[in-house]
Amino acid sequence: MRKFLKSLNQELQNGFAPQQPGGYGGSGGFGGFGGYGGGGGIGGLINSLVQQPQPANVPCPRRVPQAGFPDWFGLTDPRFQYFNVCPSCYHSQIRPTPYAGACAQKPPAPPHLALRCDMSRFWVKMAGLVLMTMNQDRRHDPTLLARVSGITVQDGVCPNTQLQGENFPPPRVSRVWYTIRDPVTGVTPLPGWTVCSHCVVNMQTLCPTISSAWVPTSQTPVEGSCAFVPSDHFDDQYTSRQLQYAATCVVMSAQSGRTDMSAMVNWLRENPPPARGGAPGRPWQAPSGPCPQNYPSSTLRCYVMRDLFDFSVCEKCFAEVIKPDQDRGFELAKRFDTAPATVPSGFTCQLYSTRMRQVWAQAASTGDLAFLGQKVRERRSKEMELQMKSTQLEQQAKQLREQAGVQEHLAANAMRVEASRASNAMMVNTVGGGHRVDAYTVEYQNSNADFTPTTRMNNQAAMLKVQAAQLQDQARMAEDEWKRFWE
Image (cartoon, rainbow, N blue to C red; front, side, top):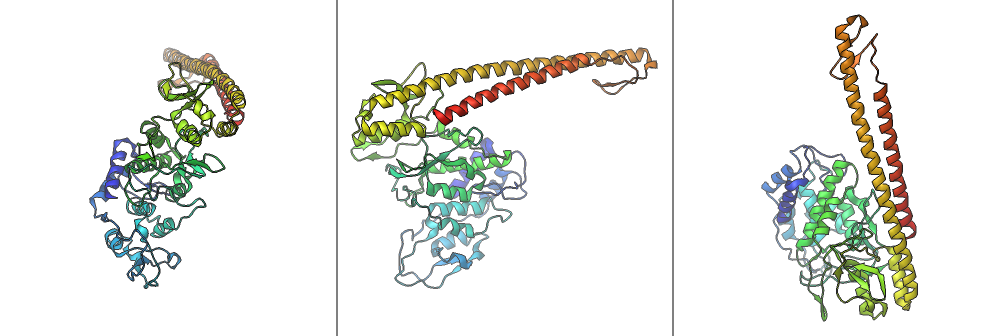
């Protein structure tokens, strides 16, 4: 935990820390940076905490349920009798903190009752990190530990909870998966990156500032794996890095007043998941890049269906959809190139959206190549139409904005010239009653200053901006139509 805290501090010092000291009004969460008062900024706060005595990172001896121990600790709050802490974790993690008074030794449990130490759970340790680092105004209380330990979801705990080590492949299971959504555009920038519902609820509990960023990839269960590894058996470094950038997003969201996941998205795009061991009989390889969606890419690699050249699929979507269907023996899934390759002219992925994955599922299950070809060609035609229209509208809007800027510049110059002329006229003939106010503004009672050209040019600039905004609205409408009917 101490190592994680130092790593988080380093990230903040490298450019993500707020520039102004003081607290935020919103509720905080994991790394939740909203909920502390005073101090010299996030980086300074964490530095001071690192220098203070911290809970020791001692391995928990009771991470497996065991019976017969009469010495459990728990919260004094009677609502959370289910929360259990072994003496080792109490003395190493809770007693050195300001929250020690919230815990006390519990009455002996029935000797046959097997209990597990809740402080050995990954997300409970993350809750402890929240309490220790970003809770200077006591926004959170120790019951956060128990509330996190009691989180349950319909699909069950994260399938990676029992992962034994970094050399083991994450299990692929069928359940509802979640990803990150851009709240402004509504786009899911990482369609191949999925997180289970158990991890999402934990993140929402610890990070309410960014809770709205998580959306399901589909409404029905599909096969997939979780990008987080909250394992009971080892500390996953890649998961720690992801959570550090999630903490950065909390900072940025608090600063901007809206959910901002760009730091985490950008890092994930540049740092794909590591390879983790091998599945039986075949090594497991993580895809090497993000999904380009409908933005042409000439640097990423894709698979192309030999019988349907318009059907290009990025490596991530291939690993998520096509490869499992190849393993199931579906004939259409076997018709792809055996190795991915770049396309110099650029390619777009045809299989990232929920609609096209449903089309593929129907075609693959029935072997209907004609149906798949029809849908792919229809989509590809609309995609090219959208790209052409969006490019044209954006270029026109850019030209109008540039013209507006020229008009504003000319108007400002004209105003300066007229103000200078009128001011000089007053200095020659003060009978007019004018007097100079500042370098650019002249007040007149009886002068011949004429700002009509300036007003006309400013009006032209405003009209050009309105026209540019209308073109951008048309581009957004085209994008909305694409998402609703064709994506």
